[in-house]
Amino acid sequence: MIMDKRCVIISGGDFDPAVKINKGDLVIACDKGYAYAMKLKVRPDLVIADFDSFDGQVDDGIPVLKYPCEKDDTDTMAAVKYAVENGCSEVVLFCALGGRTDHAFANIQSLVYAAERGLRSSIVGSRDEMYVIRDGELVLPKKVGFSLSVFSISDRSEGVSITGTKYPLKDAVITNSFPIGVSNEWEDEEARVAVKKGILLIISSRY
Picture (tube, rainbow, N blue to C red):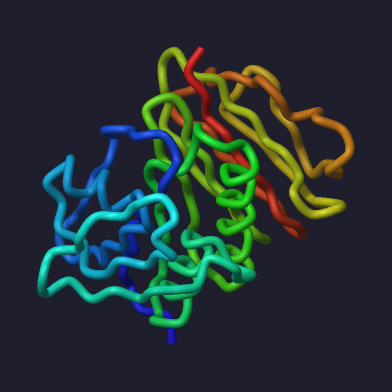
């Protein structure tokens, strides 16, 4: 059962101060993300880690799910699965970019996992915001100084429409082998991106 609850995951990419916690959020710190949480004076509800990037002590009273280093899931993926299994309706990743490119890509795939299971899914940072939608739509307020790009994560995404931008699109098919949606920009106060069938990655990046 999906509840109206947001899960904030502080990951272990580059540190980024653009972490916003709302009242009632479930906050999970992943490995080095716990050091970031301490730096931000955020007390997580849970730490998920194999402790390969953080070797300090977790404060008493904070539950820890410890995993072996040799495992299928990254720590962030394990946190996303925890959010899914505990009925969250939204997952937001912070400090999830920069650092190792392979982990950044894995974090995007973790968003896809959540979106496939009905959760609103995003990565938020100072320079980039990423959203994954499946068979749905997303409205994004205008961000001055940012581009807006739309990519197909599934092999095909059908019925793709983009409005409120310099380069609109209507009921199109885009694929994951051609970046036709890169580097668009807002023309109206908000942009609307919709897909009838498929999975889209929507990226807003600072120029």
